[in-house]
Length: 233
Ligand code: CA
Image (cartoon, rainbow, N blue to C red; front, side, top):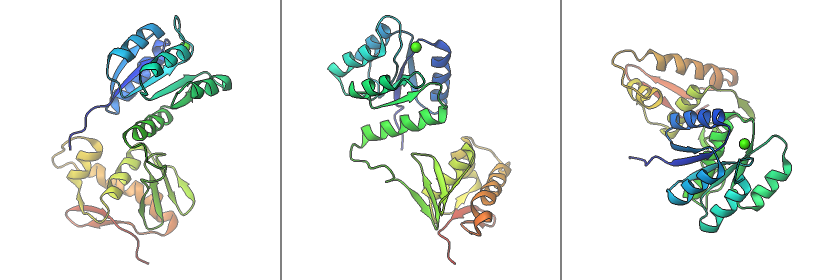
């Protein structure tokens, strides 16, 4: 299935922040444009098709609230406001003004990505309920929106790669996945022969999700690869 790249516009006058966010979003597969002031941002937003806008509030020329107000006259395009730390008034006026969400600077990029995913998902499927996409295997639970993994009620600390690998295994529960497939899906490249990385990461996962809880979820299929199943006591 070919997925169209989603387009995001960053309107942010702090160029370092704008460039950093652009880099991260591009890495995540989004198509990114940026504007360093309110007027340029508004001009882009009203003339180009974007899926989402990241909008700073304190901007030279035309401030973020005014940009939001003018965007809202024409469209219900998702907008996430970037606000200064503890500026409660900004958050309230931003949400009143029709922003879909806000994030306080400085923010962790993972949090921004999670909010972007949530807002885009809501746009694609307005009837979506949070928690609807939980993936389960036995007492293991993975929430793709929050990027959280829990066993019973313990929240586990997984790296991005471990999370992505577990996510893919769970999305294909009961299906045997070859090392080559896993490598290609998670690491994103063909790798003839050297499929060691998969085994190493499966070991990391087992040490985090199985061993501490006495679970057996990930099964090795000799000569082929791995499969995740519900546990059978
Ligand atoms: Ca600013």
